[in-house]
Amino acid sequence: DFLTVVPRWWNRHAHGGWVLARLEVPASLSRQDFDRTRAELEGIPAVLWPPGAGWGRPFFLFRVDRDALDALLGPGFHDVHLTVAWAGATFTATGAVTIL
Image 1 (spheres, rainbow, N blue to C red):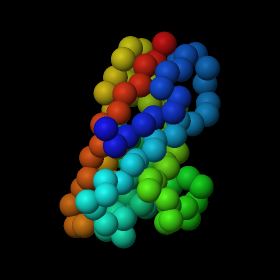
Image 2 (image 1 turned 120 degrees about the vertical axis):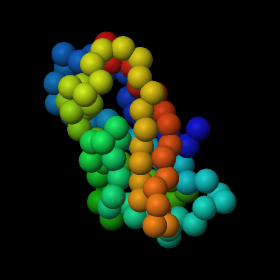
Image 3 (image 1 turned 60 degrees about the horizontal axis):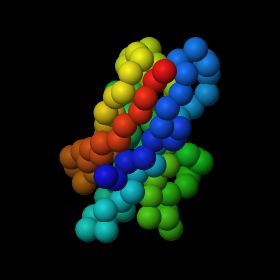
Protein backbone atom coordinates (compact mmCIF):
# COMPACT_ATOMS: atom_id res chain seq x y z
CA ASP A 1 0.00 0.00 0.00
CA PHE A 2 1.19 3.48 -0.86
CA LEU A 3 -1.35 5.41 1.23
CA THR A 4 -1.61 5.84 4.99
CA VAL A 5 -4.35 8.02 6.50
CA VAL A 6 -3.79 9.42 10.01
CA PRO A 7 -5.70 9.13 12.21
CA ARG A 8 -6.92 5.74 11.02
CA TRP A 9 -10.15 6.19 12.99
CA TRP A 10 -12.09 9.00 14.63
CA ASN A 11 -15.45 9.82 16.20
CA ARG A 12 -17.80 11.57 13.77
CA HIS A 13 -19.18 13.68 16.64
CA ALA A 14 -15.79 15.34 17.21
CA HIS A 15 -16.15 18.05 14.58
CA GLY A 16 -13.38 20.03 12.96
CA GLY A 17 -9.83 19.18 12.24
CA TRP A 18 -8.01 17.40 9.51
CA VAL A 19 -6.80 14.00 8.51
CA LEU A 20 -3.40 13.55 6.92
CA ALA A 21 -2.92 11.39 3.86
CA ARG A 22 0.66 10.19 3.43
CA LEU A 23 1.47 9.03 -0.11
CA GLU A 24 4.61 6.91 -0.40
CA VAL A 25 5.98 7.49 -3.89
CA PRO A 26 6.93 4.17 -5.50
CA ALA A 27 10.65 4.01 -6.27
CA SER A 28 9.84 3.18 -9.90
CA LEU A 29 8.15 6.58 -10.43
CA SER A 30 9.68 10.02 -10.77
CA ARG A 31 8.56 12.39 -8.02
CA GLN A 32 8.86 15.30 -10.44
CA ASP A 33 6.01 13.83 -12.53
CA PHE A 34 3.50 14.37 -9.70
CA ASP A 35 1.47 17.60 -9.64
CA ARG A 36 1.15 18.01 -5.88
CA THR A 37 -1.32 20.87 -6.36
CA ARG A 38 -3.93 18.55 -7.89
CA ALA A 39 -4.83 15.89 -5.32
CA GLU A 40 -8.11 14.59 -3.87
CA LEU A 41 -9.15 12.05 -1.26
CA GLU A 42 -12.52 10.62 -2.32
CA GLY A 43 -13.09 13.79 -4.37
CA ILE A 44 -12.32 16.12 -1.45
CA PRO A 45 -9.40 18.50 -2.06
CA ALA A 46 -6.15 17.29 -0.52
CA VAL A 47 -3.71 20.13 0.17
CA LEU A 48 0.04 19.55 0.36
CA TRP A 49 1.18 19.87 3.97
CA PRO A 50 3.14 21.76 4.99
CA PRO A 51 2.75 24.07 1.98
CA GLY A 52 5.67 23.79 -0.43
CA ALA A 53 6.94 20.55 1.11
CA GLY A 54 7.56 17.26 -0.57
CA TRP A 55 10.88 17.44 -2.35
CA GLY A 56 13.68 15.57 -0.64
CA ARG A 57 11.32 13.11 1.07
CA PRO A 58 10.14 9.72 -0.26
CA PHE A 59 6.53 10.74 0.38
CA PHE A 60 4.02 13.55 0.01
CA LEU A 61 1.80 14.56 2.93
CA PHE A 62 -1.66 16.00 2.23
CA ARG A 63 -4.21 17.58 4.59
CA VAL A 64 -7.92 16.77 4.09
CA ASP A 65 -10.99 18.25 5.81
CA ARG A 66 -12.24 15.63 8.29
CA ASP A 67 -15.81 17.00 8.46
CA ALA A 68 -16.09 16.71 4.68
CA LEU A 69 -14.99 13.05 4.87
CA ASP A 70 -17.51 12.43 7.66
CA ALA A 71 -20.34 13.90 5.59
CA LEU A 72 -19.35 11.94 2.49
CA LEU A 73 -18.62 8.55 4.03
CA GLY A 74 -20.65 8.29 7.24
CA PRO A 75 -19.89 5.81 10.02
CA GLY A 76 -18.12 2.51 9.38
CA PHE A 77 -14.99 1.09 7.79
CA HIS A 78 -14.11 2.62 4.43
CA ASP A 79 -11.49 2.11 1.76
CA VAL A 80 -10.40 5.57 0.62
CA HIS A 81 -8.60 6.64 -2.54
CA LEU A 82 -6.10 9.45 -2.97
CA THR A 83 -5.83 10.61 -6.57
CA VAL A 84 -2.94 12.82 -7.67
CA ALA A 85 -2.24 14.26 -11.12
CA TRP A 86 0.76 12.40 -12.52
CA ALA A 87 2.54 12.55 -15.89
CA GLY A 88 -0.52 13.71 -17.82
CA ALA A 89 -2.73 11.09 -16.16
CA THR A 90 -3.63 10.24 -12.56
CA PHE A 91 -2.07 8.07 -9.87
CA THR A 92 -4.43 6.51 -7.30
CA ALA A 93 -3.47 4.94 -3.98
CA THR A 94 -5.81 3.14 -1.57
CA GLY A 95 -5.92 3.32 2.22
CA ALA A 96 -8.56 2.76 4.90
CA VAL A 97 -10.32 4.69 7.68
CA THR A 98 -12.92 3.91 10.31
CA ILE A 99 -15.47 6.52 11.36
CA LEU A 100 -17.12 5.77 14.69
